[in-house]
Length: 476
Image (cartoon, rainbow, N blue to C red; front, side, top):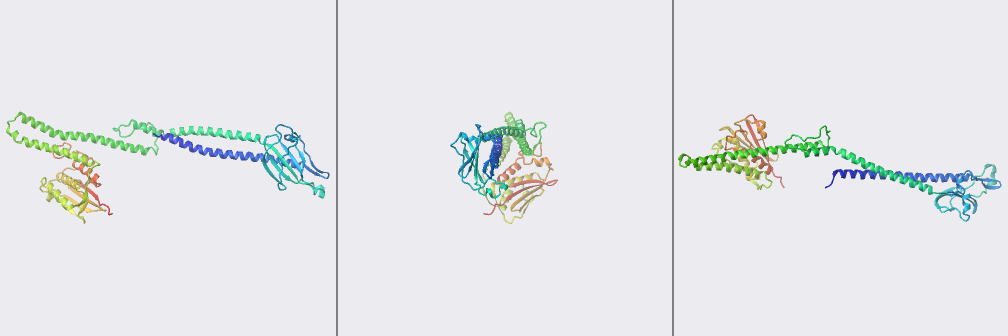
């Protein structure tokens, strides 16, 4: 399992380290170039100074050099070197070259009044850098035309680079050590910052460990600050807790309601059987016993069948056979089925069919079940002989079906909110053994399974409307 904390720390460390390495590398290159330029400038200064010591007089060219002022060209073990040529002849050599009588410094043919730099090996074997200059000695104005034929001269100055190399090594080592220390410090800072930044998330995680679905909100640490990134997560978790709480309460209520619905007929069966066993010869009991047992059993079967139907309606594996249905034929079948319960259904049910196309593409069993439950619900919970209005019309590429009926008893907002919950009945006493509060729950689940939109609401204080929207399939 990967760690988000470790991934953030490593990523930030790698990114910052890469930037620091590039910065330190640029600094190192800049320092090296600066040191090389300064070294060459120092070498140039020495060469220019030595050039100024070349004097042209009437007697000839002289080199007025004094080792007291430039002891680096003496006999020291770390001595520097210079050599002057005029024409092909050696004009002057530094005292440091006296130990190497057969060795000359670098000399090349270059343009007049120009100079070049070159890396060389010094006569004593050390690594060095040399500046070779080809120049004309400066002739004093007092000589006039007397010194016109002064021959140009070569000057080579060579200095060891070992000290320079040591300085560069020290600089590079210092930068490398500094870079390593900075990376370690950055790593430490990144760890601290990320752990501190993830504190609200860790607090939320700790709160989740101790969360109780019976509580309305997830308890965060006392005094914890709220963050824009964390609050949406917390809000969604609170919604999840709320939904879980609702499901838990619904499960408890459904369990209690199922027990209540089944307890009554079971108690009736037990009582009826006990009376019949105690008084087997009583014809009043014996005559109706079989029919009473059958009626009670049928009631229990209805409850169980509806519960199984509710479970099937909410299942993802429900089988749907969508086809073109004639809505008029389907309505006639439903009215005929309900006619044995409501003999005046044809008088009470007013149908306003404004559909241009009388065919609907849907699953026949689902649509039959939905409309049967809606008609049965409307006829049962409306005043006797009151009208039930059924409207069918096309709206926004969908077929809309409205079922409107008056109410025997007005419904409040709580009743409307829980109307489609399984086994919910607005009449809490449950004195009616023919109704079990499963019809609208089945309708809602079947509608969802088919992709229908099912809704309902009061259109007046004593009238309710149930709506079903069936979207037409797109043309190929």
